[in-house]
Length: 477
Image (cartoon, rainbow, N blue to C red):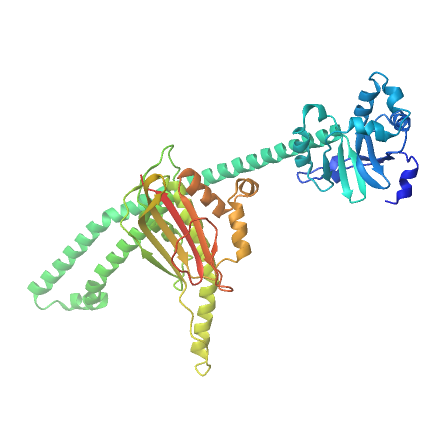
């Protein structure tokens, strides 16, 4: 602002705010504030008269030759005027004299400071300064005064909005949890209804197999002892293709047994996936949990995506099996999503090779693969006994995760971001670290740059060409 602005007393200006449209990230420049400057050379009585004419004005910004020098509040002026001889000492002398006595620590904040942050800083001031206005700097030459009561009102309004948002989010989570619980009970009931007829089929298959073998033996005995069959029976045997029936009937029964076994495993996997964990963790076979999830994902695991298992010798692990089911489902689904496009591209390339033998095409890329490795690891910590971990590594050779996406995934693991929006990986991180006391590590190498990026402080040391690897470490009790 030009220097001549301060050579005369300008009336205070009220800059209106927008309290009705406050939000969680609102800043000080959205609040009602005052613009009022006075030169240090002005007399104290001029400031007193201005305060008398504008009873809501919290103070004045003090300047000297256009340069900001500080602030004096209405409260400070009155405090010094009521002192003995205060009127004679300060009203008839320049404000420079009053300010030399009334100078105090100033809370100077940028206009872009969030209201919540400003309120917390104001509350940390000493008790005698709690009521002092705040100086808001809009730019190097523009200053405003913010009444502390206006700031407090806005702060509590924002806290109310935050509470309402949390309440609504909690309600939505409760509704979603109730829906998922109802869906789980429904699927569990359907799986139970599937298992009942499957059990009947499975239980009677052994009898059907025995009966068919007995009937075939009886037919063989008849043919052996009767010798020449009557013409009608010989014609019937030819019409029924008895020789083919003898070969195909055992195979048909074996196919029915295989189908019933697969259906039984699928229904059991659905029941396990929908299982609600007990209050306390229980021992579980992690390999069975992984296999049950792979069975549920079989419809998405096309023949172009292969699954390689390197299962080590694991003891039963004390865990919440239902929650680990969810973790494995989230990670394996993520791996399948990463490989589907790659599998489709390779299939198109193979079709192109088959239809255009004369074309010279680059060699086919590596087959899309998901590798699951389990093992027992020992890790020594300084000052503590050696800990044993159950390690589950789920890796794919897909395109990998870009560095920016990895940063967002890592950020979603924080409590704040997880409260705003719970992603499947954030929920998995919470289950492994908070519920099981384990570690959740991510390593991904995008095909574009082939550089390792870490989403955790501790990662495996094996080289990874391209793709993504999730490493889960569960403490072995």
